[in-house]
Length: 210
Image 1 (tube, one colour):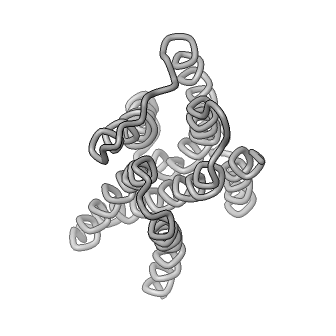
Image 2 (image 1 turned 60 degrees about the vertical axis):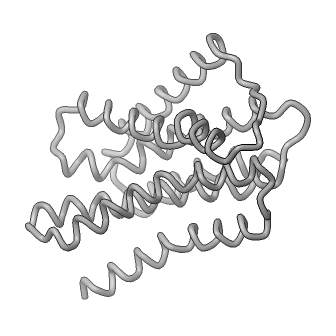
């Protein structure tokens, strides 16, 4: 029952590694894995994982944004960017290996430790897909932002910056909607659309480059 949750992000990383065939991703991926293990251990020993879920979108949104989505994403990426002495291009290129390996451990931990009785289909299937889509889109948009700034094409950089912000926030919105028993059909539709956008974005950018 947990196989999809546990294997989706590792499988995505393996596919990515197979496609690009670049050994430079090994160190960032290892760093993400070790960081996630450390963070999960700290949470396990020093915090109480089960929480009373309030019927409030704003309270749930802030909780998921801070503990599961934006804050872990921002802090891990920022610390890696500050600690690494590599060029900006290398850091941006390795955003996906770093964060994919991090969330491959961190996301299942958050879901498994938060469940006291049984797992919901949302947590097991839709949520991992949403988080993977977030990482893919942010990685694509980060590259576009970097190229836009480098080539002084701010018309490209600014919209992609907004896309990064929106994609970093949406998983928390989806989690909060689900927590307050919002229409699952609508959450599913929004999640599917959200997950398709990175693929559409990728193919459109490839076509525009031709």
